[in-house]
Amino acid sequence: MVKFYNRQTKSYEIEQVAGDKYLQWTYSSPIGMRLLELLVKKKIFSSIYGSYCDSKRSRKKISSFVKNFDINMSHSEKKLEQFQSFNDFFTRKLKKEVRPIDMNLNSLISPGDGRLLAYENINLDELVQIKGYTYSFNKLINNSELLSKFSEGTCLVLRLCPTDYHRFHFVDNGVCEDTTKVKGDYYSVNPIALEKIPELFCRNKREWSIFHSENFGDILLIEVGATCVGSIIQTYPPNVKIKKGDEKGYFKFGGSTTVLFIEKNRIKIDEDIIMESKKGYETRVFMGEKIGQKL
Image (cartoon, rainbow, N blue to C red; front, top):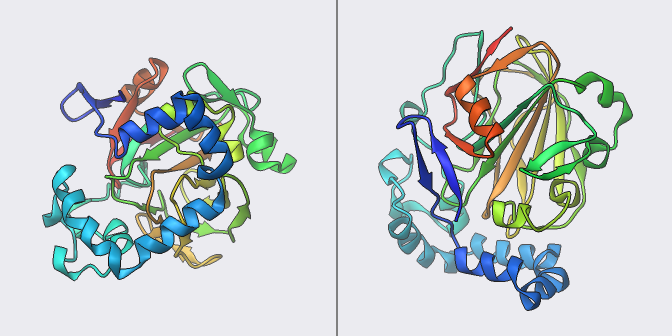
C-alpha cells in the first residue's frame, strides 16, 4: 500500500498501483527476487516489452487501462481512437489549459506530474532514497566537480507512476547543456522496490544534464529509468535558450523518476511539501504548479 499527501484536499490517499500484485510478489518473495535479478531488471526485458508497447498490437490495452485507472481523456490532445500504440497513448500530450504554468519568475514549478519528496540542506553522502534508506551523490553521478556545487542545497525527487502524464518540463527560463547517459539496470521505482533495493537510483539507467536557469542558478536534472521504460526520450534543443514550462522530454511505458539538485540558498520549498517529506510521505503535484519560492 502506497499512501501519499494530496495538497489540494489536504488529505492522504492510497495510490492505485499498476501491477500491484506483481510488484509485491517480485520484490517480496524469494522466487520473485530471483526472477528479478535474472531477467526483470535486465535491459532486454524492458526493451522487448517496450517494443510491444510501440506496436499496433498494443492498442487493445488502452481502453482497459483508461477504464481501470480512471484516466481523464478530456485532458488529452488526442482522442482515444487516434492513438496508434500503447506508448503513443502513454506519452500523450495534454491540452495546455489543463496544466497552467505559474509564470511568476520567483516561483519554482513542478517539472511534471507525480509524487514529490523534497529535502533541504542536503548531505550528499547520505541522500534519502526513501525513509530509512540512503545513497551517495558520487555513486549517482560520479562527477567531483558537481559535488561542491550542490552540497547543502536542495534535492527534489519526483516519482511518476504509470497512470501519470509522462512528459517532463523545464522549471525556469534558461539554457540546458547536452545530456550524459549512464547505463544501468531497470528496477521499478515504486516505493515497494525502493524499500528492497539499496541505492536503486545509483543502479538504474539514468540521464543527466546541467540546466543554467535564469532565476534559480544551476540545476542538475536527472531522469531515472525503470522496469519496462524502454526509452528516456530527450526532446529539448541543447545549448539553446528555452522558456519556463517548455518540454524537456518524456518517458515511454513504465513508472519513472526525475531528480533535481538545486544550489544552496537559491530556493525555499513550500512548507507543506517539506513537512510531508520529513514524515516520509510524497506530495501529489502537477506540472506547472508552484512548489517553491526564490530566495
